[in-house]
Image 1: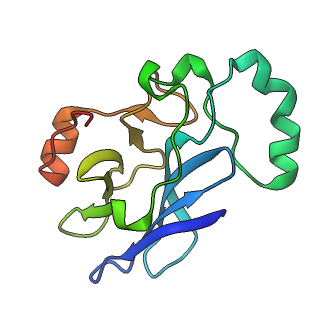
Image 2: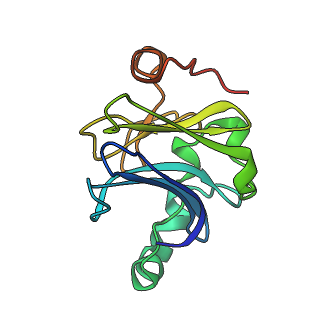
Image 3: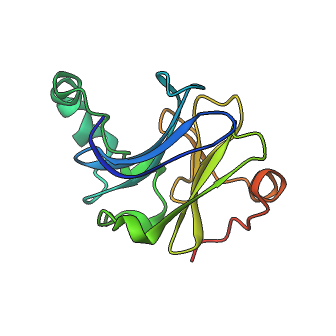
Length: 154
């Protein structure tokens, strides 16, 4: 795991939510109960410009060697996020948990940024437009049902 930007532990489930800067991208991670290994992840944003998939393929091995996830390709990133986003300060981030602590959402400046639903291995991000290895686009109904949050971008 890269640089931890912000984290929180649910008091009931013991799960830990972490926002980490992973070099060229930022991720939300959710631990297994009792702070075990990673149970779910959610790509949040690239930290630099989103490159076409064809330009990322030759770099895949370098990411594997570093143990870092590759950034999302331009083809799956929302147009307004293709320039990349700076790593936010911890004070700009907040977490919202499901009542049982089995799912978590991360908020950026009070707006929903990404979530991991209970039991899900991959999360959903406001900056994704196509489902794939980086996760899925946000589902407004799921965000409302699980966390009482609107899925609108800020």
